[in-house]
Length: 227
Image (cartoon, rainbow, N blue to C red; front, side):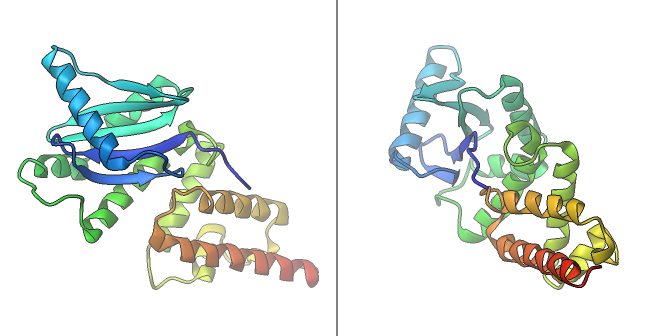
């Protein structure tokens, strides 16, 4: 299933204009270093004028800015997104202890962008926030129930010792073949949509794919043998 996502990018910029972290969801057409320098300069200029610029529109995109201590956070979205969603997103960021610490650490940091291990940690933080607002961002999940289902699945998949069968039994209970096949197929479709979305952390893509294939094989066997 192909999805048109409203989310363009998540970018963290140091006030100097250097990129700290970036996560893109579409193919890039703009030089990211020029863009980050432009954003930092324009925000500094607006502050000199006595106001803080919060939005810039480019074609059909809107880029929202919020300054957290020594970090500028840029959220790129399609222009028809509800403003309340953006405010909720930034509020959630401001209440995250890990993100607050990251923004404070930027005061003395001299190496940019984040290193691989640091990027992995921020990826997980960003993915958890995106999941929280997945329903509002539209397209990935269609209900709060689906969002909870996905979060439960991903939590179990983070255990590297687990197996597809163990995850399936943990979510659906034992005796998967006795479950309503339409219900299981709906859940498989939800997981496939999520896998294709770009929101799945790299380390969890393969475990999620294995789970989906396990569910599909199990339900196919149930049909063949008439369970």
